[in-house]
Image (cartoon, one colour):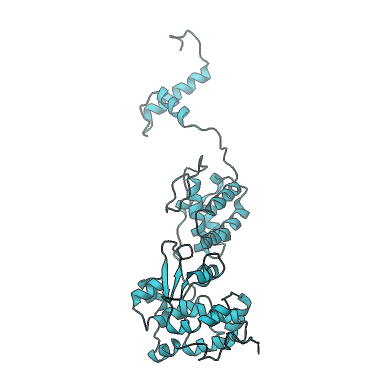
Length: 348
């Protein structure tokens, strides 16, 4: 600068220049040997100023709002179950201030670690501005606040099933139905529907009987099939048909007069009295699959119940005696003494 421009330079500034040139010439890194002009150009092109990112809570609100239009209802329920509690603890921080160690500590100190981890990973991946790992339709985040995903440094914990998968024996099925008869007809109808279709109670059966365009509109009484559309089906990828076995066909007049309706309290009363030693979660679905394997090919059961051979062998297959299976598939309103639908029902 002295020679060319004829202007002086402060000693302190000159020391900085000489120090930078020395580091460029001696540091064993990719930038070694580059001229100072290159370094300045690179800096001007990539420097984006101080951190101007928003608090994590604002990103979470945007993320959940965008998810509403790109995922199924059951997936959104999971996100709303695990992201807001995380935000209540970390929402005031900026994304870059949340470390991997903090995430590990949070996950270890809360139950359902597997599901919390499952909800938080795609959220933090989205904060890096990268394309979603799965084709969910969620757009990338513009001006992402993170360059590195802290969840990449959080070890994944393999899912561990806490309780064995259980199914009902024929005797237990009859006890459940006997207790269900003491409730309103719609509750009995709910249990009959799950028992002979194998639908998932929360993800499929509840929306099937409550959302417009489903219910009886998806029951084909000419071909005796029930259509579960892809917006209800667990993977969201296929439509599937469930065959209405002869015993379920016998229940149609009763079901038409008493549309299946979910009641947590009523179902809890039924199961507490009929099968107090067994876990009720999905047990009617497990029972359907176990008994269906006695009258259908395993591949057909996989299709109609939306499961897999691996899952059947690991969880669902039970040593159901053929004699019990024969009686199970003969359960009709007449066989258990249900009042015909044209006669008003009265609780005992």
